[in-house]
Length: 357
Image 1 (cartoon, rainbow, N blue to C red):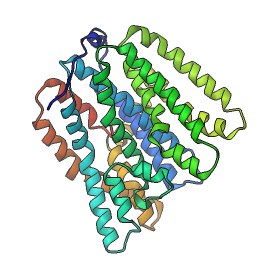
Image 2 (cartoon, rainbow, N blue to C red):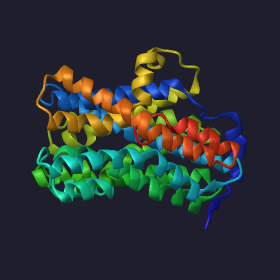
Image 3 (tube, rainbow, N blue to C red):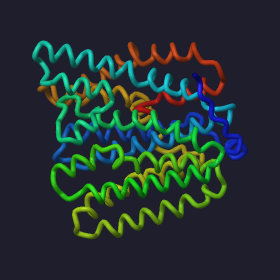
């Protein structure tokens, strides 16, 4: 059964601002995946790069998905079933290819992968497995994909329930951000178990996603658009001031929480104006548009192959391009043929850019 969300109350502001295709967002994806790759290539030299990169991905995903859903709602209603189909067509084929290769390597003894790690990655539960302290070897990085997929399953249903009340939706985002920070403070006590739980738990990571959602909602409401910079700046100031505290919680909960706030402010500046800076440069945009494949393949290459870094990077990029040409692009062409409305056509164009967006 097709569920449709009618949100006529959001349409007037939606007419003033549309997401469209913005190369700067591809560029931001490119920066995010480069930070993740740099961290995995040299974890001791760049210990915070991976956290920054993944958090940027989360906030960007929250912003893009909410923007696209609200835009589709203004074009007649959100077809939730079609939304799930678009997400599956974008994400599942490339991940399935990775799991097939990983299973084959594991079968011949070339990869130290357990059946449990492959199942966890394939069922998008890797983050909760990792939160329990179980490492997933060459598929460890799929934890972030699991969090985003869980978000994709739940968030359209929230929009369905909220309907034509953008201020209520903004309130839900703010409440969720506060709740997520509370979970981090409650769970974190400096022990390894609490570190894993806070780092990999979907509830503890929800604030990064919800900051992006809040921006998407704010851009469609005059009152929330005016309030967003003040809210973000206040949150940033609180986090920065609190980070000077020497406690474990302040250093390891509030300081990382600065990242989605800064990302939201950057997104706000980029999408509200005609940005034409370095984020739109061709190399960065290209990396951003292939960021999903690069995210999938770079970590297994680093873990499974003992070669010079340049060779590993070259192999990861080659696998990324093959993934796009042989798996991801054909899936997108198949989905494009099945589209029924101009809105869905625009959504596919925007969503083909990168990591879980």
